[in-house]
Amino acid sequence: MHYPVVPRRAVTNDMGITEMFLFLGLEHRLAGFTGIRSHGEIDPAFQPSLKRVPDLSSQGLTLENLLGVQADFVFAGWNYGFREGGVTPAILQRYGISSYALTESCVRIQPRQGVAIDDTLRDLRNIARIFDVEAQTEARIRAIETDLHDLRQRMQGVAERPRVFLYDGGEKIPTTVGRYGMARAIIDLAGGENLFDDIASNWPRGNWEDVVARDPAWILINDYGTVSAQAKIDFLRQKPELANVDAIRNQRFFVISYAEATPGPRNVKAARALARKLHPERFGAAATAATAATAATAATAATAATAATAATARS
Image 1 (cartoon, rainbow, N blue to C red):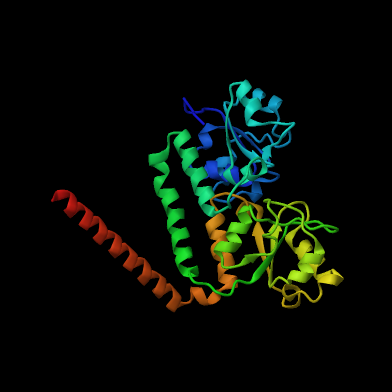
Image 2: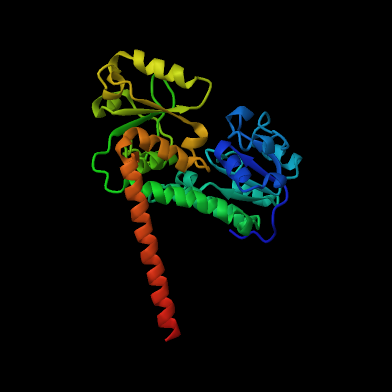
């Protein structure tokens, strides 16, 4: 994609996407946002900024809505606002409106090799580049990268990966996360194994029979929708066929917010919190010291390599 000018009237759709925009300090470029039911769901750090932005959620992400606010840029995703038969990047282009599609969501329209939190970082850097704020936002993005590197160091060599079932909702048929959802990347980074990794989608429907047969050790509750996280936990506890599932018997539940489970600046923090539950031994004082020593050794090696390269260049 080519963006010849910096957009001035952007519209974002959905929680994590809007938080990405606010994380980059781009609220002054927002003509509005959609797909957020309540301001209370937004990270408290971003709520003051969001109050100054028009809420278009009641009207939805429609062409009429976007033209009404004179949008010149839309940041959304497939099934996160974009959909065939509705608003698509191609339709927006006809009206002179640029767009950017969330990387994780592109599995809906083309093959992908996998999903990782690096996808979120790539989206952040791309948006920063489009809006010409790379220099101002580099330190913020690097802070996330540093946290991600630290967590990967801590979880290196994890042999026992407990099976994790993400429950998004649904009574007759559960909605869960498949191989290409960001929540899957979070589970993997936290040292777990996604229960429905055999489904090649991001937010598919699973089935209760496989939940029972695969016997998850942990259940990750997506706190999203009109049903509360506690109501979802109560439903699972009372479902007779799940009574002997390891996670139910041992009451191993972990609640994750929708903004944490979908691409956004909270992904690494969510993965770290889940990792502390799945592998607490990796976060003791000894583990912290070992991780710091490994990082220091890597930094020393990198410095030495840089010095050697410089010496070679001088010679």
